[in-house]
Amino acid sequence: MKKIPILDLYPQHKKLKRDIFKRWKKLCNSSSFVLGREVAEFEEEFAAYCGAKYAVGVSSGTSALHIALEALHCKNKTVMTSPFTFIATAETILHSGGKINFKDIEKDYYTINPDQIAPSVSSSDVIIPVHIYGQGADMDSIMKIASENNLKVIEDCAQAHGAEYKGKKAGTFGDAGCFSFYPAKNLGAYGEAGCVICSDRELAELMKRLRAHGSKDKYYHTEVGYNYRIDALQAAVLRVKLKYLDEWNLARAEHARIYNKLLAGTQVTTPKTREGCSHVFHQYSVVTPRRDALADYLNQNGIGTAVHYPIPLHLQPVFSFLGHKKGDFPISEELSSGCLSLPVYPEIKNSHIEYVCGKIIEFYEKEN
Ligand SMILES: Cc1ncc(COP(=O)(O)O)c(C=O)c1O
Image 1 (cartoon, rainbow, N blue to C red):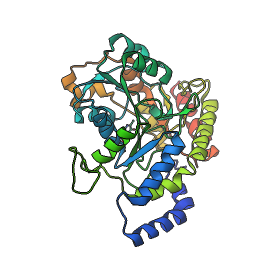
Image 2 (cartoon, rainbow, N blue to C red):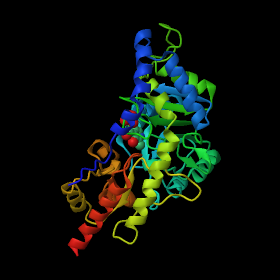
Image 3 (spheres, rainbow, N blue to C red):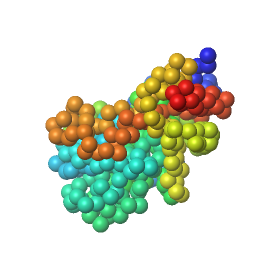
Image 4 (cartoon, rainbow, N blue to C red):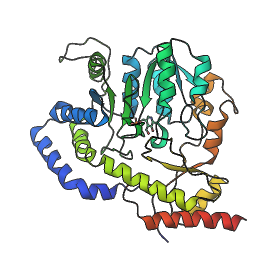
């Protein structure tokens, strides 16, 4: 039986370890472990890659969202986001003193539906579009609503490094774009790391202070901040890997194309890519009937899968105080009960994708 994990990080490590270890050796010899030149250079390179003016390296995608919300003064504001996301998107709204206001997603693309935002918008609102699975939300419509109503927009790009929406990179539409460099991400560190990009110098400086206990100069504190600094060893890994990000994203998109072709005409619904945009397939997630039985069958045949995400956030116990019930966000709920992420990473072999698709087809044939 083949063993096809949902993700295999080892091929990248094997290819890059010499470069990474060389940089780590230099850093260890210099004893410069936190922030410093390596981080500043990564920030410059990542900002340039995205087409933003500034990047602020932090300790995780969660801390990126937290300091962006705080630096944009979201306390007591209503923050609209989708319930079909990882918990951190909503959790950080509460950390920063904001109020969560969930809006359902678009059926075809799984990102926040601008038609759901428009009717209830007020000028004290903030929007966090999540570029889920690696594809941008409808940024034209979102930015139109934001500019007509003077709203702040914070993009959650944790799954969308390098994704383009009509020729512009994710994270450069709103006031800030927040990235996670968790190891499994398209651009992943060797531990926890994250980053916020923006094009406003004062905002970048405030976020740099917030990540370091509210201080620019050592032991002089102007804000109540956090210890959200990124360490230099992670920045070194990210600098090596950034050079390959486009190549890896293209490989993921090619794998998705093959999956789409092989699964056409079957009972599973394959992901759609928005016209004129690039999808970087952080996840290749299909929507399936009898999802859990299919996942079991694939697992028995040596294929790793995952469900991103089995419970939409409005139905999570932690958010019960919001008073939501089943049926409030039907598209998110439908997706949560049907979605299944299949193995995808740049180095996966075509023969593995063929095997996975063959087993999916076999499962539905056996069921009929
Ligand atoms: C959509 C989304 N937002 C935020 C985060 C949080 O990032 P981190 O795990 O680096 O804190 C993640 C991580 O999985 C994510 O997928």
